[in-house]
Image (cartoon, rainbow, N blue to C red; front, side, top):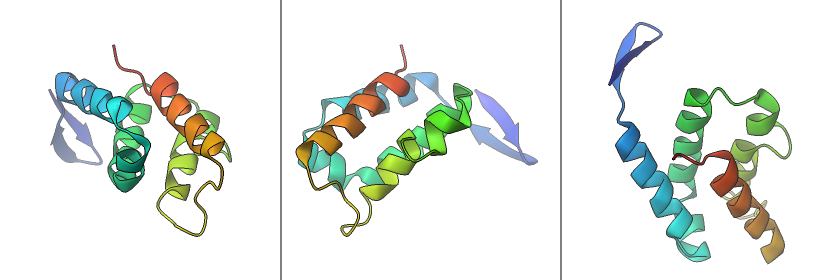
Length: 97
C-alpha cells in the first residue's frame, strides 16, 4: 500500500510489518537489545498506524520512550524485570494480528 506523509510517498506492507513484529517478539533478550534501534523504528510506525495515544507511546512509561533507553548503555534498565516489562509492553501494545 502507498500512502502520503508530508507530501512524500511511502510504501507499506502490513504483512511485512507483522513479520517484523513477530521476529522481535521471538528474539532472545540479547538480540532484542542489540536491535533496539530497529525496534524503535518499528514501534514508531506501528504506533502511528494504530493511532495509539501519545501517553502509550512517548510518556515516561511509553513504549518508544522505554525502547530508547535500550539505546544508551548508561540508561539501560539495570534489572532484568525492566527489560521484561519493556518486552511485554512491546508485545502487547504493538501487536499486529
